[in-house]
Amino acid sequence: MDPARMGDALEPGRVSFDEKMKVRKAIEEAKIPFTYVSANCFAGYFAGNLSQMQSLFPPKDKLFIYGDGNAKAIFLDEEDVGTYTIKTIDDPRTLNKTLYLRPPENILSQRQLVEKWEEIVGKKLEKITLPGQDFLASMKDLGYAEQVGVGHFYHIFYEGCLSNFEIGEEGEEASKLYPEVNYTRMDDYLKIYA
Image (tube, rainbow, N blue to C red; front, top):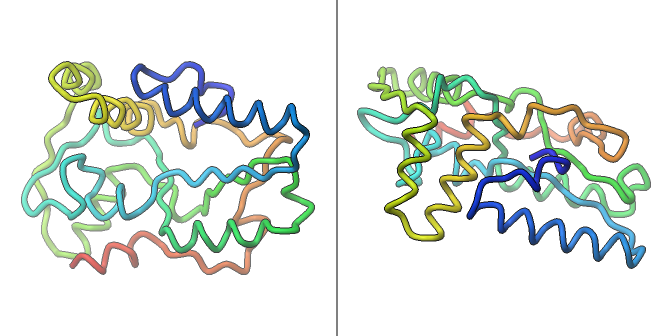
């Protein structure tokens, strides 16, 4: 999420952003050198299940599409997150900046992710479109942790908060800084579930 918009996050999910902002403020006020890493959607939680909230595995027959399914998210294999993070150590280009992990081939809409899966398994899934107001209404009967998750999903898949802003002077994009990293593309990642 764009750091400038963290304060606008939905309750109760905003708690995670409030905590991040407090830590960042303390680090910067203490003049501690830093590199923040914006890792976006870990594939193990968001890609393998085609971004369905109730499972870590791909659905067999039908799935929910959030809104029109076209908001872009950024999916990353967890090992790639580690690789990019390690590369920032002692790299003056990332000192006191945020490293945004946005490998271009992994900036996908939910629909694009689902299409990759359908191509791999050779089967079309039934898609149930879930309007934003219905998705948010589902929060009222959920526990606190689940409400936090719904809020985050809403920002990612309805608002496109991971990709709807430009990286400013306070940040760098990982795949541009480290083009030698052969990051995992999501069509290859999804094959482990087939």
